[in-house]
Length: 146
Image (cartoon, rainbow, N blue to C red; front, side, top):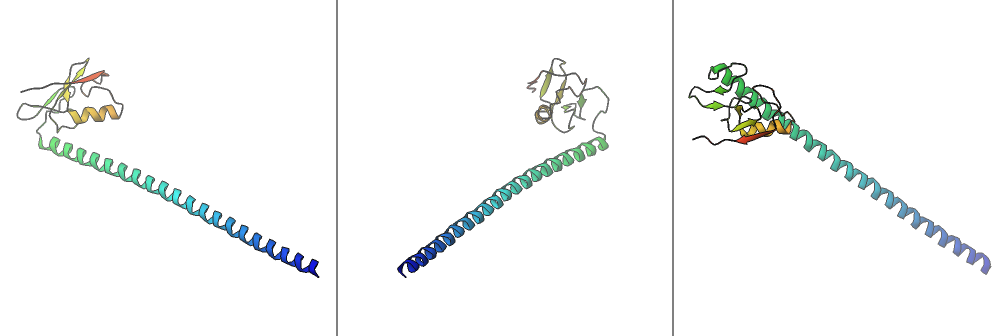
């Protein structure tokens, strides 16, 4: 009998150990699922943030184009092709946005035709061409005019 009782005790202990192992494995599985869910949540947040940034950039671009159209409709700009543009006060205005004051001379063509914000955008879009002559420029030099 003592053999049977010790065997039964060992079986009970084994069952208990197996239950503990299964609980641990289940816990690890739940933790893994939770981690994957957290990672995918972070990825979703990142995607949403990138999409919102794209939407904001498009909104800025739309505002810019609307202002440009309004200025062109008012007739305050000489619309000659291949010319540096001037407003009604005779000041050079940006050939890209038609809003900013020209601050940059493009090298090597020498056209005085772009504002600081537009030159930054041109470089960001890898469009290193003069808006006047469409020639590639190497650099833009700041010009200070009184």
